[in-house]
Length: 52
Image 1 (tube, rainbow, N blue to C red):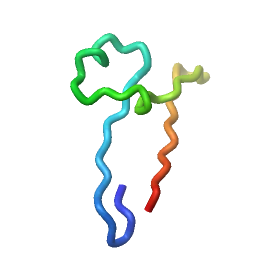
Image 2 (image 1 turned 60 degrees about the horizontal axis):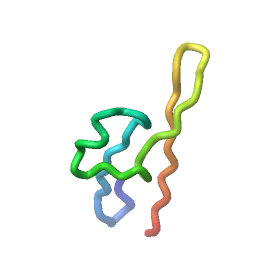
Image 3 (image 1 turned 180 degrees about the vertical axis):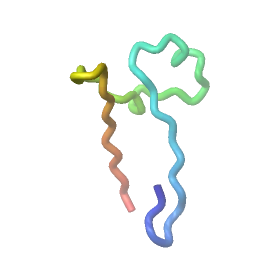
C-alpha cells in the first residue's frame, strides 16, 4: 500500500495456530488474520488502519 506521495507499507500477515509463527523473528499476534468458514472452504480477513 502506498498513499499518494507517501511511503510504501510492506507487512506480513499470519494464520492463527500456525506452529511456525513461534519461530518467525518478526511475528506479531496483531498481524494474524481472522479466519472463518466459507461455502468452499475457509476465508481470511484483516483490517488495515493507516494513520496518514
